[in-house]
Image 1 (cartoon, helix red, strand yellow):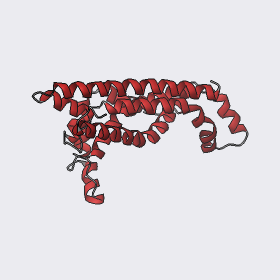
Image 2 (cartoon, rainbow, N blue to C red; image 1 turned 90 degrees about the horizontal axis):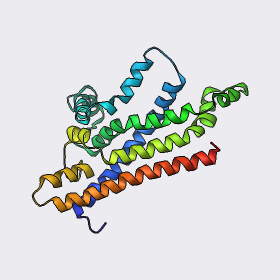
Image 3 (cartoon, helix red, strand yellow; image 1 turned 90 degrees about the vertical axis):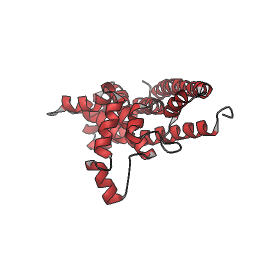
Image 4 (cartoon, rainbow, N blue to C red; image 1 turned 45 degrees about the horizontal axis):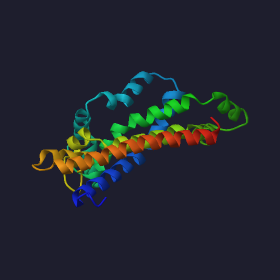
Length: 230
């Protein structure tokens, strides 16, 4: 990466950190939400399903604005976090991770639901007849069989997180060294006189990371399926 400038390397490093953090934050609730939407039927199921997938159809800037209203220092959640725990999300890399996690969350849920829907319910029923409780069945039967979807969802969300722009710039702005991720650095280069060469380098890096993430997701998913005999 010696052909990248120090500021571009900083943007790349920050993007990798933000995307990793967003996946770590989003993975446990995504597993639970995928299981809930697939295995349970309840009043409001359709509304919850729509809410989970809303970031896929909303403009990212609108998602960033909603996060600003909720998690900003004057928002109901952001204000409480600041007063009670001295945690500020707006204009920070943690806020960038939150925005990225919200945008990539539906991708994880969808991948896990597809995997979960292919699981033979008879295996879970057999475990129940053998005396396994709900948590035991989930931990020893459902979760391992969901693994291809979990891996595919996590890697896809990571790759998508590397390219998140609208929600991040709206919620946490474009602060060098703090919130200027790879897409924001690319945007900055395009807006700067003589920044075409830097923009081209960043575009190549973004393309390589995105393509590599998608290929890796497919490879891992197939490998785990073979290991599980599916």
